[in-house]
Image (cartoon, rainbow, N blue to C red; front, side, top):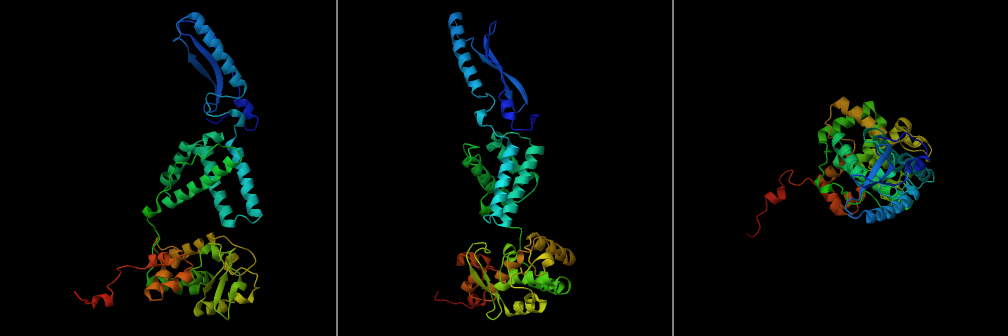
Length: 388
């Protein structure tokens, strides 16, 4: 139950206690009351001392213990909290301070928009959980066991994927690290909580069959021409959706047929150049993309060129319309176009190193994960006789 206090004065509220006293009778014990945050009231604490046989020794022992307890209580000790309440922090107030921090980091350009938005979303969901489903009031209650329960809520009750659960764990670890830096916590309560091994995560995203890709292109050419350009950039140039929200018209070199993705716009924070297929370049010209200033984003409001940077959600929203119109499987996601383009390029016997460079993979091993092994018999292997 959450204490009925809403301001920083609650620290003094929690430090309420009654002085320890000795109770004599059939049972001898030391008694005092201290505020229990979990119950939102004063709770009695008893320390039995019947084990000491002689009355004089029992009273002497009680005086010593009572003096020590009263001194500790005066200094802020609370038997129901596993820490000094002098450093007790309200969970909601810590969250407010953290939110102001990430807002500042975004405003000075240290956090990218998607990082900032992601952190805000994680924070909101944790706050909602802490207010409603599993209420807590103090930061110390946001402990290892509580975080495990929250992750189970995300993974099982809300039926999210393993990767989503891992993302929440990663952010909570960042948040707890921030709390440790500011002495709100002494250590990260996420220590010992393992992420689900990525090798055991089955992707729900699938490569889209060639005939379906053609149907998608034909439908978009009539119904959503600017989103078709986004699909081309994902399918042919392997430019990630988040990177597409940062692309500016001036980064396209029409003469060379390339797009330069600067470090500040690239996911891996490296400036790299990708090839723009001629048909895609001609399509962009036909759309009138280059009639806008070079400083404009290729995709702005309504996916038209403009000065405003958009959120990646707009691509997902447009894809939902395509999926509904063409009755596509849920496993064929917008990002599937990148997987599909890489797979088809490799199937067309374009050199792996060329595909690697176009996809901006860090190694050939990553690129070759897209090779469809044993999809069909290789004619060269069928005709192989060898020496044996």
